[in-house]
Image (cartoon, rainbow, N blue to C red; front, top):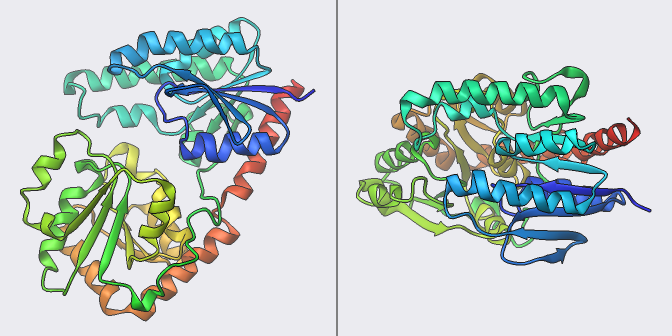
Length: 371
């Protein structure tokens, strides 16, 4: 009889790429019986994974109280061999499951205390105290949980070495490769950004850079994702650079693949905030996975990756002129840009891919079950 796994998230989409498409599917492939508890409109089985739905949260307070309590109750009913949760707000639920004798894994996607310091919706006066409380909660949890899965080496440094495994969020090698992709040298003068659209992720500077290269024929930025906060979209649409934007909203992975396959470069221009400098954003490696050169923030870790591979350009993310110069270089040197993309693709095939990372996850599970 296969071991029963219960994956719990109160904040993420049930089809989150890391949670569903990478971790849950890898566990099913390895022979585990996997149940996923998440906000969803129905119970169903998808790709061998049983999804138990939580009602949609009305707001953050509702999610962190009633939805978390509901998630705990439903998790308890699963009677799993291992509970694997993904949100810091579920730490108390994880501790309770552990106190009841269950095996528990905490999956840490972000430097949560660092992230808290830049949450736009939190009053500035409470950010530092809240970050300290989260730090204490994570330390207490780390002592109790059977394992911690960290998404980056930097995050792993905050947890006990003997029970922490780094499982990086690298792409599935061929997931986003479009067999119909436009040959690089025939592509239009377009760039792409996919992901959360926010000021701290450089959207204003991207638009300012577009203004500076407005003399380039048919230059475009394909933008896909949600605005954060919601009203940001209205603010951006009055900027001059918006006229060069093609906004796609939230898009499925298949459409994302098509969008990447007809662009000249992918943008990752996060601002230098505590949670960004040592982050390893999915989109950086996803751009690389489809042979797309990158224009990225000049952070030490990002420069080490990008210069080490030779797959793009690093710029000051706060300087629209520097961003514009990099965009212009990509357009004026198509052959060199294409080679950058090829080197990025090769690096994903050899190093930065989920096939390698999934082995670490499965070894972690074997260790926890053997305890």
